[in-house]
Amino acid sequence: MERNTIGRFLGNVGERKLLSLTLVLFTLAIGIIIGTTISTKVDAAREGAVAPDAKPLSIPAAVPLENEFTKIAKQVRPSVVNIQVEALPRPQTSQRRSPQERNRADDFFRRFFGLPEGQGELPFGDERGRRRPGEGSGVIVDPNGYIITNYHVIQDADRIRVRLFDDTRNGERLYEAKLIGSDPETDLAVIKIDAKKALVPANIGNADAVNVGDWAIAVGSPFGFRESVTVGIVSAKGREVQEGRPNSFKKFIQTDAAINPGNSGGPLLNIRGEVIGINTAIVSRSGGYEGLGFALASNIAVDVYNQIIQGGKVTRGSIGINFQQEQEPALLRAYGANDGGVLVGRVVAGGPAEKAGMKGEDVIVEISGKPVRSGDELISIVAATPIGSTVPIVVLRDGQRQTLQVRIADRAELFGDELGLTRPQDSGEIQGTEVMFGIAVSNLTKAQRDQLEFPGSDGVLVTEVEPASFAADMGILPNDIIVSINRKTVSSLDDIRSLQNSLKPGDDVAFKIMRRNPAGGSDNPWSTLYVAGVLPEAGRDRL
Image 1 (cartoon, rainbow, N blue to C red):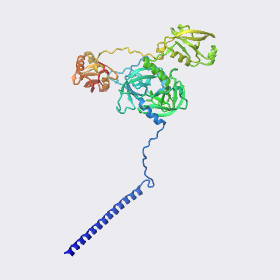
Image 2 (cartoon, rainbow, N blue to C red):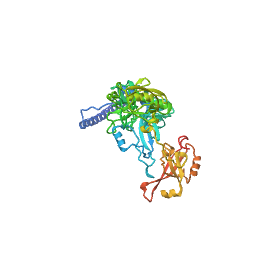
Image 3 (spheres, one colour):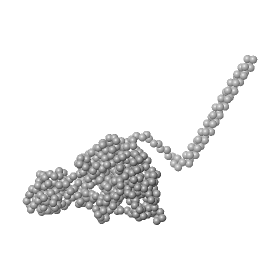
Image 4 (cartoon, helix red, strand yellow):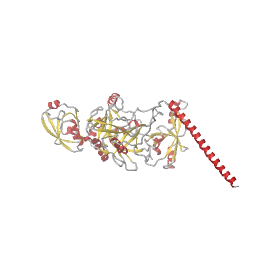
């Protein structure tokens, strides 16, 4: 009995050992098979590789390389903005430059940004009233949202919107901007946005401290590529870039930092990240970067900005004379001015100089006790003198010194038309009744329907669309015919008045409009369009 039990126990032990050994051998066999298969595949891959002796590359840990330019880019990022504008085509007027003048100026001096020239009145039903987009840059100079940019960026704009580079919270939000004031003579403008938060202004530098060879960093949105930073050096100081006529109020810093269309209005920075200029112009045969960029000196920009925020405009003194910009020393000596001066060419009739007794061929040598040796000095002193004040001006006439008491006048009043500082007012009046949505409409008479070949008996004619309004955003154009609003038929002004009284901000508004289709043929001259939007808060649209 005991022997049988011991035998069975020993038998079970042997079976377990045999089973364990079998499992071990089976596992080894599987491992050998798998290893052989993998080795074979690897060898096959190596044998079939294009570069069997090359080692795969690995990407190192991300360790940022900080330098001064990196720091400046981060520092100024919250202070530089992208500016988008929209403008309606303007009818051509006699005030426009001739093609010869325009081509001569544009060939030599190409701006970074500009809206297309107006092409005159378009035929009825064409793309008349369609907005033209444009883009530029600007720099925030006040936490409350005041921005300096170029005048030509916002010139003739019907809508100005600003996108912040550092507005990650609001993504691609565009802020409506208001024009505070502008100065065409320096090509500067001040706009303002309400971002509902304090913004980060850029640090302003002193352009007088700039030296040729200093680092220069340009920031902006060239060709619409926002947040672009380029680096170069200051190539020259005090440049005067001719654009048809000399302008002593524009003193440029020349740089070879790459700047292109869209950079206009953005800052030029020094190595400390301070604004030393406002990128304004390039000289280029191609219209793009060729190493000749010009930024208006920060000192000029600050003076213009301060005048605009304080008075809404820039005023400069004048005494009412014309003179030749470049005057040779030999010419001045011939008139008795051995130490320099300004030879008067023409005295404006009825101007301050004429009233004080100044004559052509007088040589101005002193103003308020300050010597005058050049035209730039004369303009600088007179322009900065308060309008209405009287100053002593010493002239040489026939070799004799005479002191004249001259009352300083407003330069814009004396030379506004000549310098293009005044803007002609529209003479035409829009006929129609202003209603909601930023449009003006009028009833359609039977004669108008017949003339327009309009088949329907309902609808009112859109006579005007206010730029940047609710209607403009939806794409409604002058000469459209509104036939229904929110599926309710519109036959007269009274229908629109009734509908507008039932709407409030935040309501959906759907328009059914008819638009003349020049390509539709005589059988179908009109197209039906449906546009809709959410009525905004009152204040942005006409009421």
